[in-house]
Length: 143
Ligand code: CMP
Image (tube, rainbow, N blue to C red; front, side):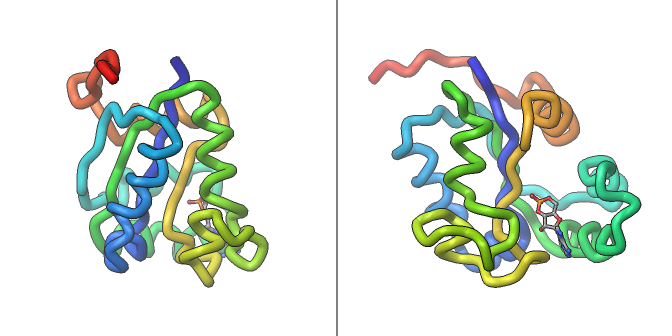
Protein backbone atom coordinates (compact mmCIF):
# COMPACT_ATOMS: atom_id res chain seq x y z
CA UNK A 1 0.00 0.00 0.00
CA UNK A 2 1.27 3.50 -0.85
CA UNK A 3 2.68 5.71 1.90
CA UNK A 4 3.46 9.42 2.11
CA UNK A 5 5.30 11.73 4.45
CA UNK A 6 3.25 14.68 5.74
CA UNK A 7 4.50 17.32 8.15
CA UNK A 8 2.60 20.05 9.97
CA UNK A 9 5.13 22.89 9.84
CA UNK A 10 5.98 25.13 12.83
CA UNK A 11 3.27 27.66 11.88
CA UNK A 12 0.62 24.92 11.83
CA UNK A 13 1.72 23.59 15.23
CA UNK A 14 1.69 27.08 16.76
CA UNK A 15 -1.74 27.80 15.36
CA UNK A 16 -3.14 24.60 16.94
CA UNK A 17 -3.93 23.00 13.58
CA UNK A 18 -2.51 19.50 14.26
CA UNK A 19 -5.88 18.07 15.26
CA UNK A 20 -7.72 19.68 12.36
CA UNK A 21 -5.19 18.36 9.85
CA UNK A 22 -5.10 14.82 11.30
CA UNK A 23 -8.91 14.80 11.30
CA UNK A 24 -9.07 15.67 7.61
CA UNK A 25 -6.86 12.74 6.62
CA UNK A 26 -8.61 10.34 9.01
CA UNK A 27 -12.03 11.31 7.68
CA UNK A 28 -10.83 10.99 4.10
CA UNK A 29 -10.13 7.34 4.92
CA UNK A 30 -6.34 7.21 5.13
CA UNK A 31 -4.50 5.28 7.81
CA UNK A 32 -1.98 6.88 10.16
CA UNK A 33 1.03 4.59 10.52
CA UNK A 34 3.49 6.93 12.27
CA UNK A 35 3.44 10.30 14.03
CA UNK A 36 5.54 12.41 16.37
CA UNK A 37 6.04 15.98 17.56
CA UNK A 38 9.70 16.78 17.03
CA UNK A 39 12.29 19.50 16.59
CA UNK A 40 14.08 19.43 13.23
CA UNK A 41 17.86 19.87 13.38
CA UNK A 42 19.62 22.06 10.81
CA UNK A 43 21.25 18.93 9.37
CA UNK A 44 17.91 17.15 8.94
CA UNK A 45 16.31 20.29 7.46
CA UNK A 46 19.07 20.61 4.87
CA UNK A 47 18.76 16.93 3.97
CA UNK A 48 14.97 17.13 3.67
CA UNK A 49 15.08 20.25 1.48
CA UNK A 50 18.24 19.29 -0.46
CA UNK A 51 16.50 19.74 -3.83
CA UNK A 52 16.03 23.44 -2.99
CA UNK A 53 19.64 24.03 -1.87
CA UNK A 54 20.43 26.35 -4.79
CA UNK A 55 17.26 28.41 -4.43
CA UNK A 56 17.50 31.94 -2.99
CA UNK A 57 14.97 31.06 -0.27
CA UNK A 58 16.85 27.96 0.97
CA UNK A 59 18.22 29.71 4.09
CA UNK A 60 14.79 31.05 4.97
CA UNK A 61 13.30 27.59 4.47
CA UNK A 62 15.82 25.91 6.79
CA UNK A 63 15.46 28.68 9.40
CA UNK A 64 11.69 28.36 9.37
CA UNK A 65 11.44 24.57 9.60
CA UNK A 66 13.93 24.54 12.51
CA UNK A 67 12.21 27.44 14.31
CA UNK A 68 9.83 25.31 16.39
CA UNK A 69 8.42 21.80 16.64
CA UNK A 70 6.84 20.10 13.64
CA UNK A 71 4.33 17.24 13.65
CA UNK A 72 5.78 14.51 11.44
CA UNK A 73 3.44 11.85 10.06
CA UNK A 74 3.33 8.85 7.75
CA UNK A 75 -0.02 8.09 6.14
CA UNK A 76 -0.99 5.05 4.13
CA UNK A 77 -3.69 4.42 1.52
CA UNK A 78 -4.50 4.08 -2.16
CA UNK A 79 -3.07 7.04 -4.09
CA UNK A 80 -2.30 8.77 -0.78
CA UNK A 81 0.60 10.80 -2.24
CA UNK A 82 -1.45 12.54 -4.92
CA UNK A 83 -4.64 12.77 -2.87
CA UNK A 84 -2.82 14.36 0.07
CA UNK A 85 -1.32 16.97 -2.27
CA UNK A 86 -4.81 17.74 -3.56
CA UNK A 87 -6.10 18.07 0.01
CA UNK A 88 -3.16 20.35 0.92
CA UNK A 89 -3.78 22.72 -1.99
CA UNK A 90 -1.26 24.63 -4.10
CA UNK A 91 2.13 25.43 -2.53
CA UNK A 92 1.46 29.15 -2.87
CA UNK A 93 -1.53 29.99 -0.65
CA UNK A 94 -2.51 32.68 -3.17
CA UNK A 95 -3.35 29.84 -5.57
CA UNK A 96 -4.73 27.23 -3.16
CA UNK A 97 -8.45 26.63 -3.45
CA UNK A 98 -10.82 27.22 -0.54
CA UNK A 99 -11.55 23.87 1.09
CA UNK A 100 -7.91 22.78 0.89
CA UNK A 101 -5.69 23.02 3.97
CA UNK A 102 -3.58 25.87 2.60
CA UNK A 103 -6.62 27.47 0.96
CA UNK A 104 -8.35 27.57 4.33
CA UNK A 105 -5.47 28.36 6.69
CA UNK A 106 -2.39 29.79 4.95
CA UNK A 107 -1.64 33.26 3.58
CA UNK A 108 2.15 33.14 3.01
CA UNK A 109 4.31 31.02 0.71
CA UNK A 110 7.02 30.54 3.33
CA UNK A 111 4.48 29.67 6.06
CA UNK A 112 2.13 27.32 4.28
CA UNK A 113 1.19 25.03 7.20
CA UNK A 114 1.97 21.61 5.76
CA UNK A 115 4.49 19.68 3.67
CA UNK A 116 3.65 16.56 1.68
CA UNK A 117 5.82 14.30 -0.47
CA UNK A 118 5.41 14.95 -4.20
CA UNK A 119 6.29 11.49 -5.59
CA UNK A 120 6.84 7.88 -4.49
CA UNK A 121 10.61 8.49 -4.57
CA UNK A 122 10.31 11.60 -2.36
CA UNK A 123 7.97 9.76 0.01
CA UNK A 124 10.42 6.91 0.52
CA UNK A 125 13.32 9.32 0.99
CA UNK A 126 11.47 11.64 3.38
CA UNK A 127 9.98 8.82 5.48
CA UNK A 128 13.54 7.50 5.85
CA UNK A 129 14.82 10.89 7.01
CA UNK A 130 12.19 11.36 9.72
CA UNK A 131 11.26 7.84 10.88
CA UNK A 132 12.97 4.57 11.73
CA UNK A 133 11.24 1.33 10.66
CA UNK A 134 10.42 0.62 14.35
CA UNK A 135 8.45 3.87 14.61
CA UNK A 136 6.00 2.81 11.90
CA UNK A 137 3.04 0.58 12.72
CA UNK A 138 1.78 -2.17 10.43
CA UNK A 139 -1.84 -2.88 11.26
CA UNK A 140 -5.05 -3.95 9.63
CA UNK A 141 -8.03 -1.73 10.22
CA UNK A 142 -10.67 -3.68 12.13
CA UNK A 143 -13.49 -1.32 11.16
P1 CMP B 1 7.12 22.62 0.80
O1 CMP B 1 6.04 21.81 0.21
O2 CMP B 1 7.51 22.36 2.20
O3 CMP B 1 8.42 22.50 -0.11
C1 CMP B 1 9.35 23.54 -0.26
C2 CMP B 1 8.90 24.79 0.40
O4 CMP B 1 9.58 25.95 -0.01
C3 CMP B 1 7.47 25.07 0.03
O5 CMP B 1 6.65 24.16 0.69
C4 CMP B 1 7.32 26.54 0.42
O6 CMP B 1 6.93 26.67 1.78
C5 CMP B 1 8.74 27.05 0.27
N1 CMP B 1 8.88 27.97 -0.84
C6 CMP B 1 8.68 27.72 -2.14
N2 CMP B 1 8.93 28.82 -2.86
C7 CMP B 1 9.31 29.79 -1.99
C8 CMP B 1 9.70 31.15 -2.12
N3 CMP B 1 9.76 31.74 -3.33
N4 CMP B 1 10.00 31.83 -1.02
C9 CMP B 1 9.94 31.24 0.20
N5 CMP B 1 9.59 29.93 0.40
C10 CMP B 1 9.27 29.24 -0.69
